Amino acid sequence: MKKILASILALALSVSVLTACGGGSGDNNSAAAPDASSSAQSSSNAIVVGTNPTFAPFEFQNDKGEMQGFDLDLLRAIGEEAGFDVEFKSLSFDALTAAVQNGEIDVIAAGMSITPDRQKQLLFSKPYMDASLGIYVAKDTDGINGVGDLKGKVVAAQQGTTGADEVQDLADKRQIGEAKILEDYNMCFLELTNGGADALVIDLPVAENYMKNNADTVKMVGEPYVADYYGIAMAKDNTELEQKINDGLDKVIKSGKFEELCKKYELPVPQSIIDGTAKVA
Image (tube, rainbow, N blue to C red; front, side, top):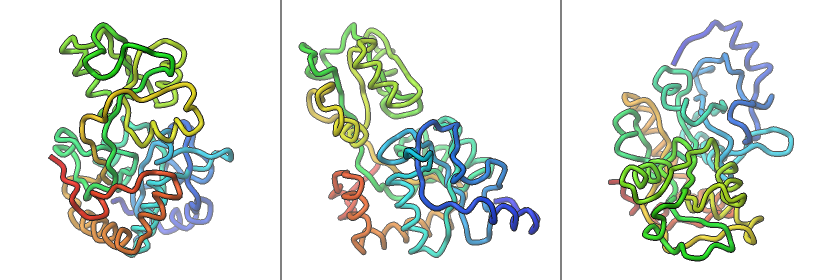
């Protein structure tokens, strides 16, 4: 975390107080987001949380261009329990890891899956969401009932996600015809419904959120596969912050606030998170 001059801090605090959060394009920050030039710890009691607001219901932009979502509310709740304030900064998903490593941000909260490769670069909190992957196709699609039916097919996924890793692996093994990796999940669903892709591999909670308003256009096939958990990420050596976040998360879960947030964003309440049995390989 960088130190900055008191005069700059006073000015930053006077013009960039963050309240609600939201999503949209990760590069089009709303006025509600922290100033892009602010350093990772803009006050002694605040952490800067990097997110990519194109991943509803976890992070997205509302009609006013303000960032909001489950992850942002969860970080606020954790901060209240752990005794720190939070500020949010919108970045592209692919830029988040470098940003936390170079101190531009302190924490990543962006529906980021805990994977072995990411654990080599980042320190993760306890899991906070079960987000296993599913296969989705256009509503009128026949003949695709699971991963075994994807040979020769064009399969889409969002870049930087475990879905993209899975799809690329299937392509490398020639179990699909083509991996189509797109910028955000909205583009993935658009490609699917327009016929540019035969199937889409994506996190179940995100797909379920999309299907609330688009149930007549897409459907899930087969059973969920590839276990996946989201975690809050930080720099590898930041064990002090990791402890604060884990302690705060435990308190948020115990108080019932976690379940409230799941219901607010119409997410399933993951029992493995509530009872602490979620395990990451």
